[in-house]
Length: 444
Image 1 (spheres, rainbow, N blue to C red):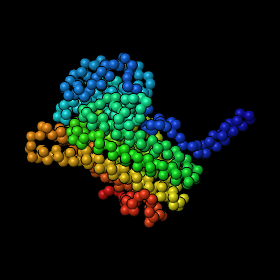
Image 2 (image 1 turned 30 degrees about the horizontal axis):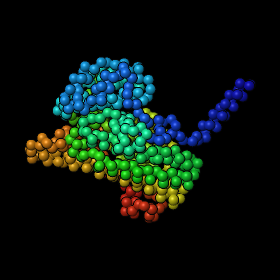
Image 3 (image 1 turned 180 degrees about the vertical axis):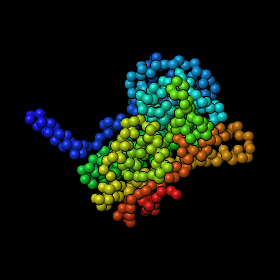
Image 4 (image 1 turned 135 degrees about the horizontal axis):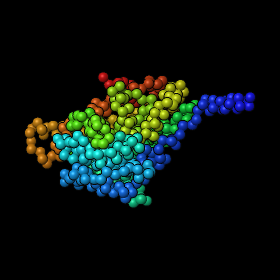
């Protein structure tokens, strides 16, 4: 009798906790209060046992230019990954092995790729990747989120005081590309911090709190756009397109490596992985899920696939945001002018960020690609033209394997609901931009 009573009491308590909405929190998603998705204070040295990796990874660029990287890697000892104890040690190991792998595959450009990654690189790379839940290829989480250090540890987090841990061919443009992208991630920290405020406000029916959080979110998205504008000052388009870009490319949907890459000692069949891509950043995925933005089928499928290249905790955050009560429905139900305006402004700022990204892609890929094609058609001897060194297979695709411009244009064609306030002016947003953002449909 007593046991039955206790059991019923426990079931009642469980039911109470199940029925009640627990506050949404970022505590379990490897998100930093100060740095967001960025790995705080990455390690810059591995334990001495792994010095053979570090010796090569720290000199990848010079070894590529001397055509000696592959021979150095083939002589490298097969190391055991069991001595990598902490998450940060594993992240640094993954970064080092990723840089070596990209250099090994692309050392001789698109015309002399390899079919097999040697076992002394492939086996530890696979083991570290499995432990972290990341694929065995260079990702945004490696090249950007975990590839930074401060010159002055007490100094500011800015371009002058930041340096890369490992680099690739492309000199200052490589540094600029990765670090500007890092600053975009840093500018997005208020976006990430606003997410639980918005979700909990919706759960509590608190329109005022949600409105304030959305206003902060839209300001932060503007900050992301402002940070992205630094790309023009720190990256040379010809260098990015002609030298650097191939080292971010993968072996999926890539005509240079149609069969993929065999990881020797891991699997007998080749495997395919996409290269590093901005679509692997968790930021816009979180914004899309929070704002209820849906993409057309092909683009949506590509974006969903890119989530497999994120740290698992960040991917889980995106999924969990999608499971929360709908912010869009809440905005419509509340019929509050300030709330609707704040929501619309977030959508417009997000569209503006994506539109500016198209501008950057045009400058750094489309225009140099056109120049390279022109030189080939004219059969001009262009040894000194940097753009001529770029792989022809990547002229129309992104490093992640997407048809780059068509993809980017579809993600600025967003299905949006038509709010009751469609005739009202949103403060700080031109009416023409506002209406265009609200009336977007799928691209044909």
